[in-house]
View 1 (cartoon, one colour):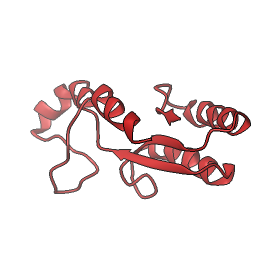
View 2 (cartoon, rainbow, N blue to C red):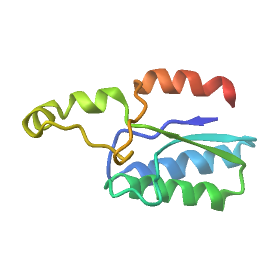
View 3 (cartoon, one colour):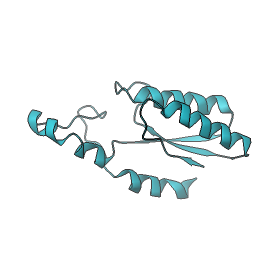
View 4 (tube, rainbow, N blue to C red):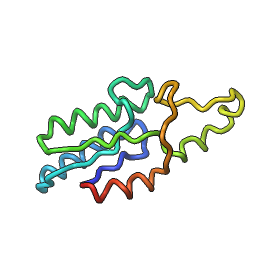
Length: 114
């Protein structure tokens, strides 16, 4: 099963736990989860929900794969005004270049690997 992180920030962990519990009840053999880069050390507020989901996956006993995608391209378009104002686009890669791709592209490419 490919568990694509929900878009409802603040409610993700609960929603993801429900999906993980349903997968376990229904005998899913492997869960792929679209987490975030460096979820366990990232300063991003949303990383906490990804960490909670990763902990729920570990506790479930269902084998899983973490797909720690980089920031989706569409996330940058939402922050163009501050990026232009400050002359920088910041991300979790530190001083390194990060990979870019849309959420749909990454999810479509992840499915066949599960």
